[in-house]
Image (cartoon, rainbow, N blue to C red):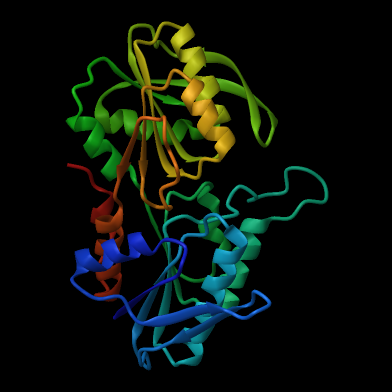
Length: 309
């Protein structure tokens, strides 16, 4: 078994390798003068079980192309099996045709990964569950819930209510509320554009409660900011957010600073950005991914990784 890292998130790759007690495989990733990506795998990988760690985060086009080229290089070097480890699966928002003449880019990315030579996918908290069905190869879909719930359980918060920032995330919120034995609510919202939302109303009792907004992904933080404001208007004692993949832009950072959120809990599935001025708690998913890699390599079940003590 050899683990390779792309350039998207080398720190996470190092933490995964450290947990597993191995060294990262040697690979030379460079650019031609015109910007094309050049990959050369230094180690002999003939007949080896290969894992390539590369979240499809910003810049997504560069990171996706680099991943595809690394997979092709490993396939042509006669690797026995190639697993793409995607802590964050980019282009997942476009998972269906919700208006005329638009692509289903999540399916396109799945096709590209398989065509490049991927034998297996390991990913975490997909934006849409049905993306697993876009692949005709095995997909191991992990959840960050065990890591986040462990942190929330250790915090001294009482009268806790888990809140979904929209109706689509109610299933995730219900799972968190069950694990934490807490209340449940959701915010009914209307999206004006890809970067702007307008919160409408809150369904559930949040008055005098410590609320935690749970979501899988945030970039411009419009949903979190509007939801936190309406929760405070409805009498919430405090509002926090727990987001698996935090790809906050500068616009999002400014919204978070002006919002009533007291803390943003996230994971290291994507590289840490410049989050000055915001109270952040970054939880590592390296052990979760490392344990999954070990079990996949040993042909063992990963089901127990979903269980929370």
